[in-house]
Image (cartoon, rainbow over all chains, first blue to last red; front, side, top):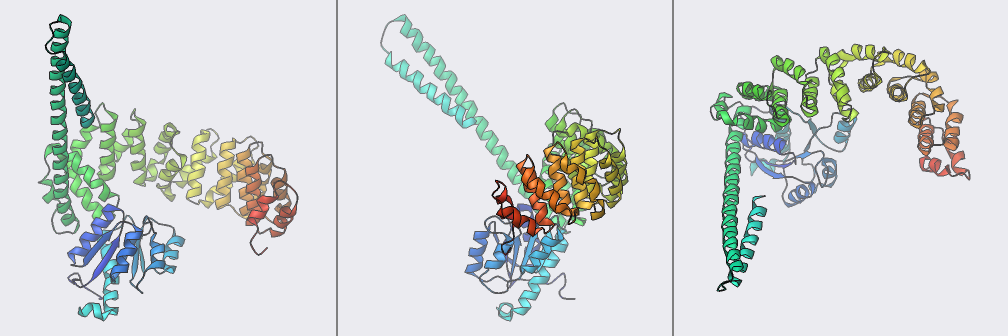
Length: 138
Length: 372
């Protein structure tokens, strides 16, 4: 098992770039319960500005984010390899595969099961933290 | 609204005061009457301003209270969804007059989550649905619409019959909401009832209706095929069936579509829908039923026929499509024919067309690959 239900992520920084208020609220709540530090933005420009300012361990971005879409964010991220999880309404297989090709580590389709979505996000957060020991030790 | 009313009454009061002061000290009975009239007017205006102000403040307070209540519900709801509290924790916080408000708050969550979380939301909403059902008897369509929306989102299997009955509601809005929610339950047995109800929603975007019917799933396909094959069914219903079967990519409907298209007096709307269906589901061996429609009198049928040939045609259709690009009276058909040539990779024909000194040569030029 990679991580358990009781693991906390208090050294992690997650950027939630989600315009859809209920999705953002639900994911924010789930991640905060695991003590992750969350920053929330609602458009692509703010997401890019926030990512330029400090490195994040994980970016969860809405695929159709206003300003810059999730895929555009993937192309323009300043720091190498913050895993990006996309969240969207896409059910078309090809479009989801394209997101992976552009570098997304996962694609969560809305409507989603909050418990499962959070588990998927936390899995990549844990992988990101273990790949970046400086963050883990800070 | 409150602001505007206050502003108007204050302006009127100022005018009245101005006239009163300017006529002060005169003994003319007309002016005295004017002074008294103005004073009365000022009094009424001030009273109205006060009423507007009080109403505005009351509304503001009510909104603030609602926001506050909503926030307190939200926090409990998040705990419930995180399985840290039981649904009853929220039940205890809702007064009888707030049932519908709570359900309104739950709707954004119901459209965002699925699985266990959605079941939990339904459990939270369940005790309030009986109040909501009473609203369906309201004389106001908007109240009934709100009620059926709540039942659609949060009602269980036992509410399916309420949704079915509401399809006959005198209001199209209420019936439309019931239609969508009933279809979302994906019960193929509801297909006949929904198709029958769809007729009254003719004015609604057809794609929306077809999208709902598609939610009934493949198990409803035999019924749609049956209606499509039945010449006595209305054209509109057959068109809806053809479109739904296209969205379901139902290969078993191909022989029916071919049989209907073989009929020379098929309605243009239906022919157009069937040609779209064939383009999506048909195979090259089916192209023979499509070709005659290239010469239909109706431009939108010719468009669909040329588009279908782009998918199902063969090398021999190059000349037919080239003719359409050059000679069809409709430029839209010409564009569709050129697109179909490109789809069939008839680059040679497209190049020849683009080199002609013909007003439509540019259509082919635009579609030529950059290296051609």
